[in-house]
Length: 316
Image (cartoon, rainbow, N blue to C red; front, side, top):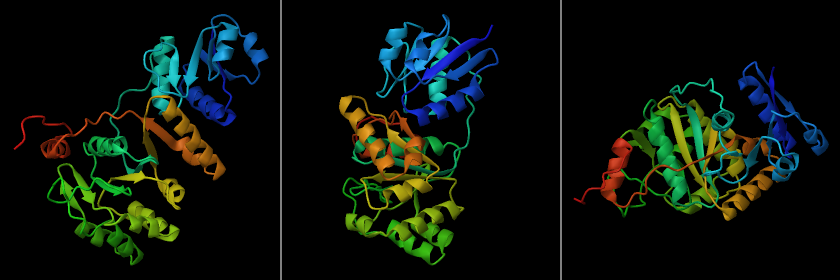
């Protein structure tokens, strides 16, 4: 006899995407159905699984239920964080219902442009960007670019007090307009351990002055360049062109923050996306846990860029 999994989600668009993905993953002996009314939920047979983002419904029907939470989940046995990669949701589902997932942990070479985004900025975003860059560098040639108003700048000679007199992103955008992609990019980038870096703009006002057309040229140039497999683009704050920039990305990730205030920020960002008719951007955002260690000094920074780990020994 087939086991049935019912989903009751208030966000219908999310529910449709959820249903489509789970239908591809569930084994033949399990079915998945979407219900749209609480009354339907009350008639669900014993032994069925109910997935909902409404705790009231789960408590009311008293059936075996899985709650999709809008806040990160820690120790709860029957809760899954809603805003994470589909594979992570599937893995959590399999663990809860005692099913073996059919997805092997295959190492896939990541390609394309990954935007690490956080409109409120902060160290968490930079650590996540470095984390993604170093993980990708295990299998791919990686370029790291910061588009933050106050970037953490890694000059060719690492120092705690870098000079802001340098060539980098602004010069490359100009070169892209002159169709000198690879030639200029190769001259401007430099390596730190396993990753290559294109220096950020020398002044935050340069970011404000970029036009929508210049950003489109930049993103198309990153797509067309052939020197790197993967580009990690760290993006902070909202600019006039931020949504256009994110539209070009193959992947959008944000730091996974815990707490009530972080949940409010996620909601506000979602509302911004819908207000600007950029729902597809919200749909593609993945919230990721930051595992990159906090870096306390220059030695640790050098160690991380070389190995992905931190040498916490005594300073030079």
